[in-house]
Image 1: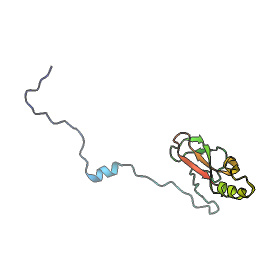
Image 2 (image 1 turned 90 degrees about the horizontal axis):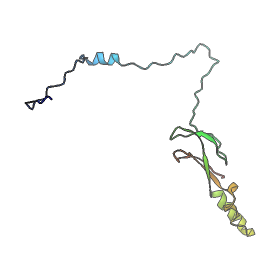
Image 3 (image 1 turned 90 degrees about the vertical axis):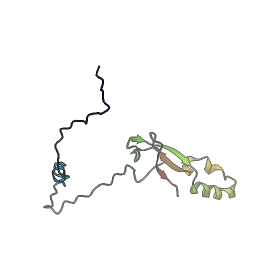
Image 4 (image 1 turned 180 degrees about the horizontal axis):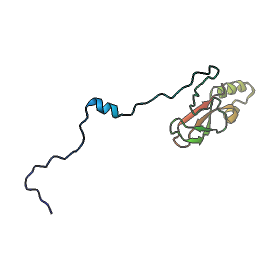
Length: 127
């Protein structure tokens, strides 16, 4: 077993080459732009904005890519009473059926959630 008699620890030995800043910067790979052919003016490239959310959320679960956890999931939906539900209930009060819209899911707004991270993916409002 080796015991060190003095309290001094020898410095670590490094055999790293010394580089100045210019040499160091030249060794870092630089990003390059992709080659683009502009010779044919009839071809137009339009980038697609894929946010993972469809433009028309329905009343039933849909398959989306969650913007939070980036998982490809089928959403689960929760109907919630919204403005349309309250207006319809107010209009039906004259006929004595004021609570019916609160029990019919077709009269409610629908909120879509991710089953993995429980994030609200989107909401479809009736009004």
